[in-house]
Amino acid sequence: MSPAALTTPPSTLITVAPTGAESSKVDVPALPVTLDELVSTARDAEAIGAAVIHVHIRDAEARPTLDLGLLQDTVAALRETTSLVIQLSTGGAVTDPEQDRLRVVEAAPDAASCTMGTVNFGRDVFLNRWDFIVELHNRMRDAQVVPEYEIFDLGQLTTLQRLLDNHGLPYGEHVHVDLVMGVRGGMPGTAHALVAAVGVLPPGASFAATGVGRSSIPVMLAALSTGGHLRVGMEDTLTYSPEEPVRDNAQLVARAAGLAKIAQRPPMSIPDARSLLGVRPPAAVA
Ligand code: KMH
Ligand code: ZN
Image (cartoon, rainbow, N blue to C red; front, top):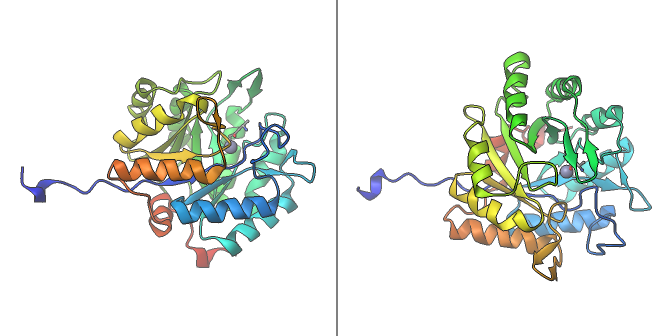
């Protein structure tokens, strides 16, 4: 085969998920929970190769919150200090009411998560009823917010296809999925499970993958070798290697960027990420 026949492999979209809703600051002192800590984390992640930030915020006592005013302040601060695509979590914590989760889109992020079904979440239940999913999908389109469809188990991809068939494409008209693997109650964080999920993605969809805990590295390697993108961060991973706690989010982003370079799929630029996902150009954002 001549070199000209080879196609250039796509670059890798790296999302940093720095905080989540499950870990406490007391247990994990390096977790960014204040706005200053979040902004500093975002700037570091951007410098190392992240293009998207998946945001959960905390209140003054470092408890998870979906307070709309705080979310608006967070979006404003991240826009001022970084060029990252700002993706707010609508999953929140397992205890958050549906109405609060729906209102997240009113904080005017570029993007937001949208989970495709209910899943056991350790000893808890992460509830995502069909009617809630439809309402969130529609509100996001009305608000010009790009969804990242979060998939915790294989059947949730069937739900995604049904959503698209019955309610149409999202804002931006591109479907982007994040496979969240290795949650206790969801699909395992293995290469075999990832390949099965990739086989039933909606046509034309792009995907990222996240391996929770010890599944972080196998999922990253499987995603890179199947053309997928990466999400990493302390929302999902608190141990860098057996017995070694994660130092900070930058350490995880650096590892992802390094593996992406080794795979000859270097980190995607932020303009390319905006174009792939179909988010509004920065100038169009109020
Ligand atoms: N914290 C989990 C219950 C999302 O951000 O949309 C849900 C979650 C998914 O993290
Ligand atoms: Zn999340």
